[in-house]
Length: 129
Image (tube, rainbow, N blue to C red; front, side):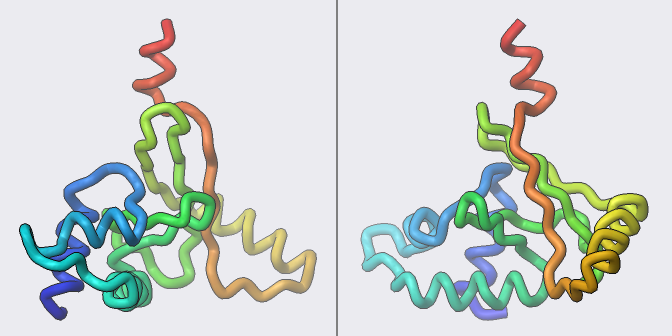
């Protein structure tokens, strides 16, 4: 684990919201120094995604730390709050079975199984009342 990878992972663990690569560069660049090059950040993020430490949210073009240590073949669902920007992740055997059935019917071989669900979290729904 290189220092940039470690700093990126620590920064993602410190935030409950998805973080873009450029925001991440600002957070982990040395204070008063030059900002890290975007290619360095993307390389670190690619490594962290490949190792299962981080997830990429396609709809947000941002990254979140993986808090659950999912297996490579698991289906992961992200519940993204459109009000506060928070993200929760979940996985279940039932969801994995449902996605596998859809793929089998369509004779589709998935390489990556992520579901992004956008709405309002419990906290934000309660705040509207």
